[in-house]
Image 1 (cartoon, rainbow, N blue to C red):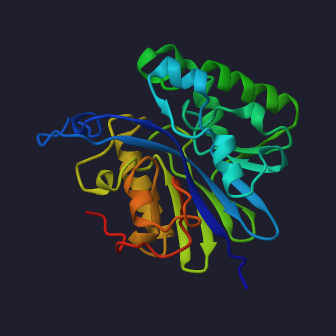
Image 2 (tube, rainbow, N blue to C red):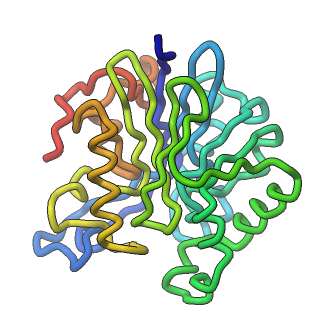
Length: 268
């Protein structure tokens, strides 16, 4: 029998934005379309795995983002102590997914070979590419490599019963998604294979890309891995919090993804 998990989306930051900035080529029906920023926790009685680590207040100030609840506080709200987390999956090394590394002194980081080669290679000299990475976060990850705290992966791999990593690329060279067994089926934490549900619509990709063909194929892979389209979780959509139940009564900004969507989970 496959182990199953509770899965939490934990909102930590926010950015006011319009639709034209969220689709390659813009959007003729421009209007408000803000970004939310999340980390994701995968939990059962045997283990806790964190997916991505967010960014801190200093980064928020530099980049004009709003911290709504620091990552450590969001984890604490559901009973997770950052200094006890032993496994962290980094979906990709963009600044909003790979900061806060000092919060997790015991963690082993799971990263794709291709992503570390990408974020330390010649592409970073291009400001349009390198500007979405944080040099300090990349350097911190390199330090962890030398400290023996990075587990490299080359492709797809199960890291625990019911939790597997899948290299997809597209958004970045070594982008990976996470497939999790839950009581309602296989949930895929898609991270930035689609920032929004709307990025899954044909011809509407998010504009930050390493490869458009790989991005499209990444979405197809994610949908094959998920039990249904309602089991795919995008990386930055405020609708996630609207569609999924709160982790507990009165707790805002933390959703239970292992439970059925409250509004049907449609992709429109």
